[in-house]
Image 1 (cartoon, rainbow, N blue to C red):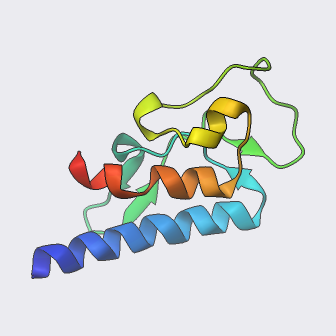
Image 2 (cartoon, rainbow, N blue to C red):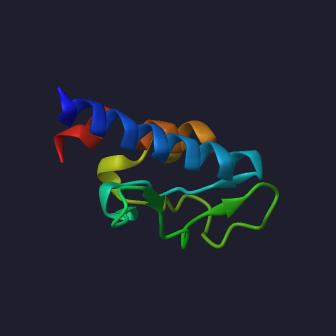
Length: 98
């Protein structure tokens, strides 16, 4: 049972970190296990904001180009949509199978 509690705590920390970024209008756009870092004290950090986009900022990619790791990309991203819900989708159940 301790394992499941630890996993739930880490997922909650990741969700809280994303919510913080979203409050400032930043969408990560590449949430995946390798972009979540675990510190020695057991706390979790979201890393690699290299593909992130700030709300209202010019996009560095061309129209029709989808950025991110395909396995974790939300379906709406393939149609040009993106937003905080895309990060939440990426943090979902596929994560647990990695």
